[in-house]
Length: 179
Image (cartoon, rainbow, N blue to C red):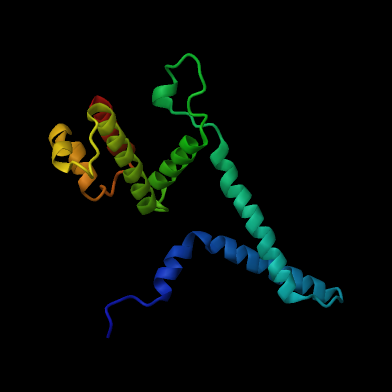
């Protein structure tokens, strides 16, 4: 017997957040098809399904992406600022929404951790180049010598699995700023 899980279980796990949407569209399709049949019309069931899926996809896209365009407010930093429009950046707002979702649910944590690690690594590399004129890939020993050990370890190891947590993220961001 194989020790690998069947192909359907990973698929069901990935589709779990979409379960309500799939059930909703199936019920809507069934009700419309049944209603049109009851009033004496002959519904074109496949075409009805295609139209419903297309309309639902447009609505889901709008719903999922409209929330990410709201103004992000960072209470720990924005409260003491007198002016400006801090946080009015769609990338920052999107990241704030993803961090909030990762803290509240397990949804998208691995992808968020990978994204954060990649972006923070880019910032560390840019800081290394701007301060010392060193590119890690060209001079790794020099880079290791001038970088703080914890930032070097952050670059060359796998990202911590709890990188999405505010306290962990704050720790690495403060270390980058201090360097």
